[in-house]
Image (tube, rainbow, N blue to C red; front, side, top):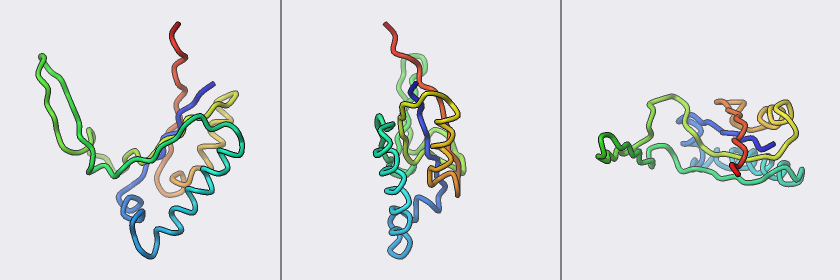
Length: 118
């Protein structure tokens, strides 16, 4: 079954990405996680996201499009990246989520993907 691992990050984590003294450790932890998923053969797809302030939100109400700069929700944690994994069950997905770097400083959300419609 495919599960989506959503790596949520806070403002400090987004700032660390480009910090001259702290970015090395940040990216090493992520590369280790990506390497482990890749070597396991469970990784279906993944992607990192630009910081939330680069987002644009679109809403359509009564046939009218409304575009807003920034993320949809004003929260302390925003989506920083995602991984789609193919594992036998939720417990296995949770074990991989626990290893995700953002689990130690923000949070990780795990969701099963809907099966393809035929």
